[in-house]
Image (cartoon, rainbow, N blue to C red; front, side, top):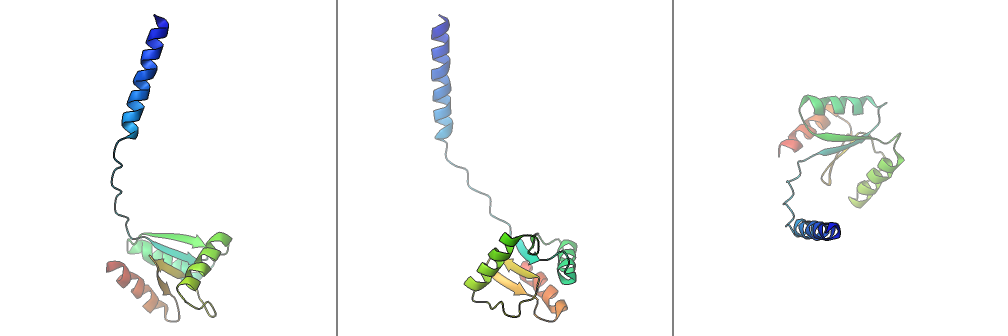
Length: 120
């Protein structure tokens, strides 16, 4: 009798797990736009960029390319793929879903571009 209960329980568990496995996958939530910022914790423009993004409630992920060689290689590979020269590259470099925003001079213009590009 005890063996019969164990076998019935096992069949019941297998049946329930099969039904659960056959459920249709739920639709994934749409991804929010998150900026990827490549920079350095010792770079004043990078520190100011992070503060600017936080103050403007813009979602971002920061990678310190001085401390994270994988992030550095990732950034360089993305720039190469986008045909962007790294010859006189300054940081921070911002990746917005494949669109790159780079600080090439006027830092105020760079920050305004970040704000403008995230509102589109």
